[in-house]
Image (cartoon, rainbow, N blue to C red; front, side):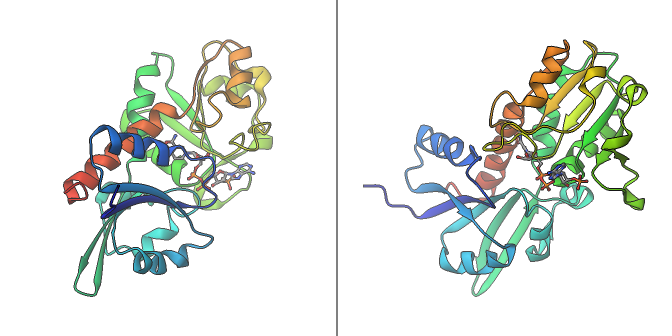
Length: 258
Ligand code: NAP
């Protein structure tokens, strides 16, 4: 019988779309860590986090998904410098010293995105539109900046500090100037698979690269519309694996596998 002495898990809401639980539990089984279990912890509010950690003292590490990647930061005593710069955390290590909790935050979306994105690039891919302005969009922007790729955010609303383009202002010239389009919104994610970002797909060409951070379903409408016009497309599955593997290394180095 499996006796679980260490718990890893995912917080966010909702969590039905997530493949993390399966991915981590398969790796746990493959590597023979029969005392560890990875569980989904759907929290309706991030304010439930302290109670969760009290209820499950065996939790050693957590992944964080939408919509808590920013709001979780106020609970963390320490935040790694990259995550701090991006302003978003998707991995937390948890320690306990007497009564005190020691929480440190990291962002592995950065390395996950970079690893899956770079192999797709061609010389004409020099400028990108990032659809959405949330946690994942900020990790994407961090990587683009590092790679020297010009980028603009696209948003549903105008906010002075974000300098984003409104969807309604995307025209032929803009789509022509930005040969990379990255969907960092939840539009098209299971179960709402018929939704897609409202961009003018007619102007997409075979020179475009459409990268969807969504991995469930594997082929989104956004990708389908791009493919119909000859664009190179990718879903977020490799990114998911990349960020999960980097989180695994953080959990291991923290001692969760001992
Ligand atoms: P988030 O923090 O909730 O942000 C999503 C952004 O999308 C929002 O800031 C918003 O930007 C825009 N948005 C939200 N609802 C929208 C709607 N109905 N119509 C148009 N735009 C909308 O989520 P996130 O954590 O950044 O994640 C975004 C997506 O990336 C999710 O689908 C998530 O599953 C995926 N993701 C995948 C991976 C991976 O490993 N593959 C990793 C991280 C995230 P505006 O308000 O500015 O429009």
